Amino acid sequence: MSRPRPVLPGVIAMSTRRTTLRHFLLHPDSDGTSQNIFLYCLAYAARKFGIRVHAIVVMSTHYHAILSDPRGLFPDFKREFHRLLANAIKCHRGCPQRSSTSSRRRSSS
Picture 1: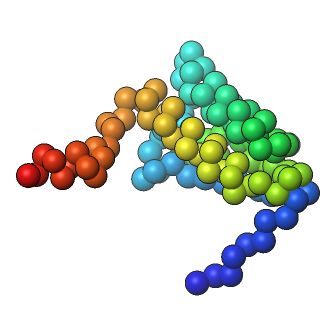
Picture 2 (picture 1 turned 135 degrees about the vertical axis):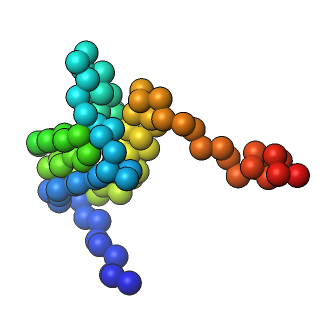
Picture 3 (picture 1 turned 120 degrees about the vertical axis):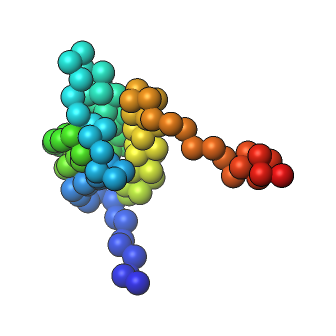
């Protein structure tokens, strides 16, 4: 196992994230909805954790971002941003919802 990466305040970092199974979930819409979803989720999480966004590039299957983290909350920011973005894009694209473990147990009994 690799050593844990230190989380230090004031660091500038590059973040890259790929979509699940490399599906084209981030492709631009003609009305700009997916672009607005991405920007809203990024802005919300960045503001919540004090992250400064220097540059972003969004492709159909992944994104790249250059960010600075003055407070040392980069892992919390990424968790919140990726959770918000995944849920919003799944709703927008009409992806099927996973059933919870407890509902699977009930249906198999």
